[in-house]
Length: 223
Image (cartoon, rainbow, N blue to C red; front, side):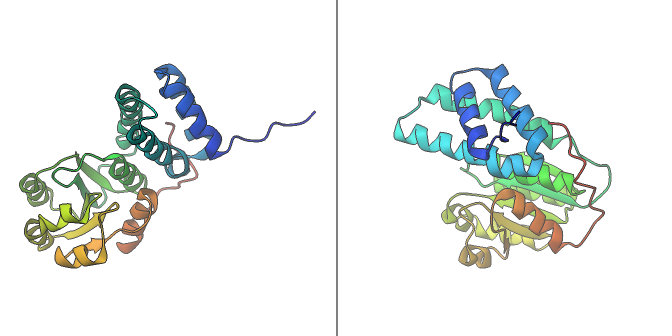
């Protein structure tokens, strides 16, 4: 008796495409449950969920799927990631404030960073998409976090608000994330740059602050 090979990340992404883009919410959640169970949270995010969301955006831009399909798939995945964001929250540990820059609505990568930081023992305050810099500064003053992470897909989104980010950087470390984070704009904003995919960015930020009581990631949180 032969054993069927384990599904690959491509197989999982195809399964999400078949279910979510057919408006099958229950089927999509079943696939997601299997993905998180078999791959673990970090690999599921890096190898399946975030690449699938990128593919959805590309297909929508090309006209291969409609806006209803894109919105439906995004909303199902946003609800699932929102649950994960609160699953590992702890009462103690370093604090990170995370926000998308004004005008930036691509938030899934930042949500993934928040999830992984929580799993690494951080407390997180997630402000979400299109956050005004005045509100970001208010959160930073109130919470006094060890780190602020801001995301944008265009360098100009950071550059346009460089004075505000420099003011935040006077009291905490500011980290620029996503495709718009370049060395030049990081220097302009008195910020550091987080390279790589959002999961690895979270790990890099954690390592920059040293080992702060990392939990055993072998015991995956159910998704």
